[in-house]
Each structure stands twice: as structure tokens, then as C-alpha cells.
View 1 (tube, one colour):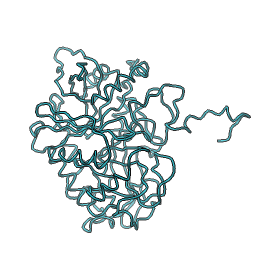
View 2 (view 1 turned 135 degrees about the vertical axis):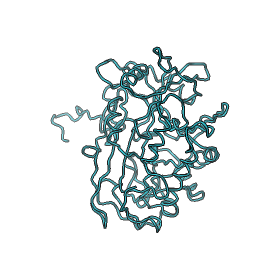
View 3 (view 1 turned 90 degrees about the vertical axis):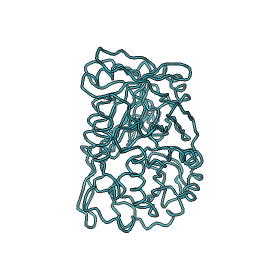
Length: 458
């Protein structure tokens, strides 16, 4: 807007700056990613995203992105034989200490639940069926289950208050203790956003007290890579004073800072991860440890602080007959049915199980080369400039790589500065969208021949 004073130097608009400015507070980029900076969100296919949004708002210091649809419901226009339909969303971002402003997606790590109701899971399980498996496996949270490894780890300085609030409200949680290589004791509180795949692990360098009859903490393996623990300790003093819940009149706890996006992994997928992430995506391996029957590997994207970790456990570490390998096989079957040889098919509902990497400095040429040679499942979209979360010289117009799936079947949203596209994406007949939400685009003709227009929601 035009200035209403005579000296333009008087204009203070931190929201027009990178990262939205700090609004006079204290920011620290050595830990905690956000849109435009590193691993910026974790997204899940959800059957009831609005309920998930409500729960997150109740317990965590989060905000809704400014680009969210009214009442978390996005309206999609009629197209061909498909009547007008809706996308339900439950998107929040974790507020950062001392940060303000930010772009349309917010100024903190995103936790997104979405139900793109006209997308399909052909050949696999529905979202509701998978959520039911998670809920059954986690049960009353009294025992560790390997599906708890599908989580996002956040640091907090108010872990005791979170535990007390969850206990008072009847929210089921699991506590565990673990040590760093230097012998420092940490405590984790693991909690499920009810009825969803979204699992959060809150950690603090502390020990907690427990009432009579309260389940005592279990012993866990190291949950956060050592290098990240060092960064966290170095940065803690810069934001700790503004990080602690000070009022008992609200259920909203202390600020949470993202550290790790975690995945459970089968032995088969684990054997392929290092090639995919190091050779293919150009990440650095930061953690590689085997403790008894538990194996963990972690990777760090260029331009990120949040790490991506994978934990392999024996099959009997999860309840029931449906194992981590079964989940992976189901996801990859659906991706094959939609995406194999059809990189412009946007109908795969399990696309919504992903995290996003926003980076100016990732080596996009090597990523494209890897996709051309190894051919992991991937999705391209029509583009006329850089990703919305990034600015700078626009890459070539035309198709752009948008998603790739790692061996676990979970996806990666690639908000990177690509200058070219995979070979199978260079010739496109896909028209630019004529609406604001690209998920509204239904083009089954871009998919395998047997995928018909969605007349039944799956």
C-alpha cells in the first residue's frame, strides 16, 4: 500500500521480507523449519480433517494458514460428468518463538490433514480403513507399537504441562525415556491426533514425575539424531524464555519446534533408502545405528534443519496381522496403479501422505537424473514459474516435478528450483488449472486406462 507519511524510510513491513520478518522478536534458524525454509510440513490423508484441526487447535500453539478455505471446506467446480464437490481440510502451522508475519501457508511447520474426496485408492485400502488400523494398533497407548514411529518429533520446554493436560482430559499418551550419547536424559510423550495417522512425539531434556497408578515411562532408543540434539542445545537459550506455558487457564501448551519427520520402515524398504536419499535426492546421512533388533537411519536435506528418519523393527513390534511391510506394499500398489507410466495422473489419494522440502540449494539436476534412470513413482504438474513458497529467477516454464515417492510409499512434495523435468514429463497436454486449488483438477484421462472418472468416493 502507498505510505501515508512523507518519509518512505519510515515504512516498516517485515511481512514483505524473507520469512516474514521477526516482528522485533528473536528467531533462530538452526532448528525448526517452516514454509520456504527446509522440511516445512507433514501432510496426511484424513477421513475427518476438521476434527483433526479442532484437536490440534485445542492443545498446541498453532494457527490456521491465511490461504485456508472458508470453514476448512474448499469448493471444487463441476467438471465433465462430475458434479461440484468439496475438499475438507484441517491445516495448521506451529507458531515459532519470536516470529510473525509469513506467507499464505503460515510462518511455522505445517501439520495438514486433507480429504480430497474425489481422489481414489484403487487397488488398496481407504483412508478410513488405514486410520482404523492405526487406532487399533495404538489402543490405549500403554505399550509401544512400531506404528508410533510414523510421527513428527517436536521439542518443547513445557513437556510436563502437556502430559498433565493430556491426563486431565483423558487423552491417551505414552511416555518414554532415552539418553543421548553424552548421557543426557530425555523424555518423550507420544500422542495420536484421535482417529488419524497423525502422531506427534514431544521431547524435552528432562525427567517427569508420575502419580500413583500412572503408567511409568518405557525405555526407548535414541529418538533424535545427535547432531540435531547439539543444535537444539545451542539454540535453546535464545528462545527458551518465551517457550514455556505460563497460564493454567488454557489447554494450549508451550511452543513446539519441529526436529524430525519419522517413518516406520520394513527391512525391504530400508535396504533401498540410502540409495534413494543419498544418491538420488542428494541428502546427507546423519544417523545410522543398530541397537539390538532396532535399526535407525536419518537423512538431512540441503537447506533444512528438520531431519527425516526411518526405524526398522521386527514384525512382532506391532499389534495384529497387518505389518509395516503390508502398509508399504498397499501404498506402492496404489501408486503403481495410478502413477506408473502416467506422471500427470493426480487422482491418487495416497499422494496426501507426504512431507514437503522447500530449498533453494538442493541439487535438482541429480534428482532429475535419478528419476530418469531409476524411475521411482513421481508426479508432475504444469508450471509457469517457481514453486509458490519460493522466490527467485523462475525456472523454465512447462511441466515441473512436484512429488516423488520414497521406497516406503510415503511421498515428498518437492518445492525446489527445478530448471528441467523428468523425460516422461517433458511433453504435456495438461492445461493450466482454471481455479485456485490444484487438487480440484480431476483428469482421469491422464491415469491408467482402467481408472475411470470417480463416481464412487473411496
